[in-house]
Amino acid sequence: MTENGTATGTGTARGAGTARGAGAGAESGPTAPTARIRVLIADDQPLVRRGLSLILSPEPSFEVVGEAENGAQAVNLARQLHPDVVVMDIRMPVLDGVGATAELAATVPGCRVLALSTFDLDEYVVGALRAGASGFLPKDSSPEDLSAAIRTVHAGEAAVAPRLLTRLISTYVRASRDPRPNPTRETGTGELTPREVEVWRLMATGHDNAGISGALDISLSTVKNHITSIFDKLAVRDRAQAVIAAYESGLVTAGGTTPPAGPTG
Image (tube, rainbow, N blue to C red):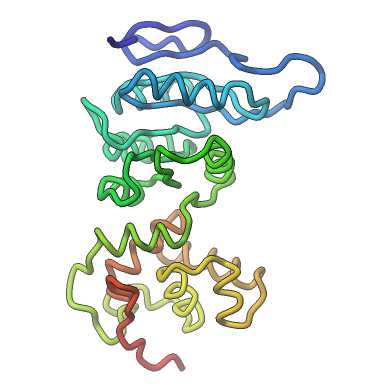
C-alpha cells in the first residue's frame, strides 16, 4: 500500500510521499559531520525504499530526508526538501524516472539524480542520462557502490563506469543522420580544438581519464582541463551527456567505430 500523506518534521509534503525530520539517521555528538549529503529515495517498491534507507541512514555522511513511491512524488518532495541527491528508480507509475529527472533538472537544478534500474542495458537509463541524471547503478550493486556513487554525483561528476556507459549508449543512441566526414562541423561543435575532439572521441569509446591520458600521452590534469572545456562548448553537464552527444553527432557509432575525423590542423 502507499505511504501518501505520511510526513513528519520539516518539509511536510501533502500527498507527496514521506518526508523525514531534519537529523533523521544522523549521529549525535561532536564528531558528527557538519554537512551531510541530503538524500531523497524514489522507488515504487516499499521494500526497496526501506532497504536503501537502511543502507544509507547509518552512515554519518548521509541524511535520508524523504521517500517517494513515484516520480511525481519525488518531484514534489524535492521542491520542498531540496535534497542534494535523488536516488531514482527509472520505472515507476504516475511519472517515471525519466520524466521526473527532466522536471528536477528544470525546477531544482542543484539536485543531482542517481538513476537505478533492474537491468544493466535499459533504454530508460539513457533517457534519464539525457534528461540530466548524473549517474546510473544497477539494482544489484553493492551497498559500497551505492554510497560511492552518491558521493560521486554529489561532487558533480558522472557515476557511470565508462565501459558500461558506452555499452548503454551505443546500444540505444543512434546518430540523427548518417555520419559525416567532420561531425563537429555538421553538429555545430566546431569550436572544439582538434585535441578536444580526440579527447571527446576517446571518452565516447569508453576510456576513463587515465586511459585518455595514456592514449594521448598527456597529464591527467590536462585531460581534466580538456574535458571541462568540452562540456562547456557542447553545453552538457557531465560525461554521460557528452557521450550521448558523441553518438548523436556521428563522431562515434555503435560498436565503437569512428568516421574519418578529417584534417585536424
